[in-house]
Length: 318
Image (cartoon, rainbow, N blue to C red; front, side):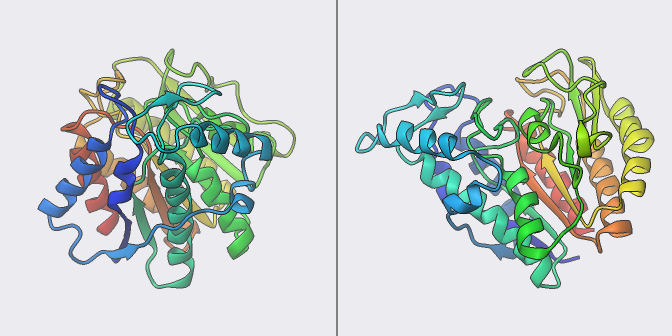
């Protein structure tokens, strides 16, 4: 199966400071692993591009976009300076806006690839991650919500009616949930450690208005692994997706749910990521003509992250 990949060295230019877990070395580890396992050789390459403010406004408020621009503009001419975004715990540097725009626009290019070519699967190894970014606030290392933007872009540009977003990051994707909580056209399913950052994602959070029943959270305790997480996928996600019938499947692919990650206490193995990918592909094949877009979120072990990505990408190519 042909696979599209979004990779570009510019994603290393988002500097977060010495010792920060969301560091440029994450991108280097992922690309080195994909190169060494020959997974790049036959892939369709997706170029990055800058998302426009109009495209960002599909998810984010105008005031928040101005805040990001202002905060980062204050670092102009100081390539080694790192500060915190004024809305929360996001390290930013002089090129952070450029990189985040290229990531968001590149993910949109990946959506185009799925709908305009014969390629039906794509993986985007972007930085910074996005699933904690709400419409009006950056937090949790995230500036712009890449998967939410991809969903809205697919709806506007390609007329997609229903999108399923699957989030297996160890942290709850609160920004994605907030974006679609009252929407109804996007289903959000998340497995995540609880209690843990950011403290959201309880089972009772199910959406409201048109979105009622479209938010599915499976909070699990520290120490959970493949048995518990795969059970949530099989028992809750598969029947819900069958009833929802998404036209596009998007994965918030966080690998901090892998065993040994310094920011999580889940125990997923590389084989578990293969199985989770298989279930997501099953949904895509049954309802979305095979279209599945995967976007990198967390994963902070420089050994575990690339191993998990390789298992995931191999499964996407199967």
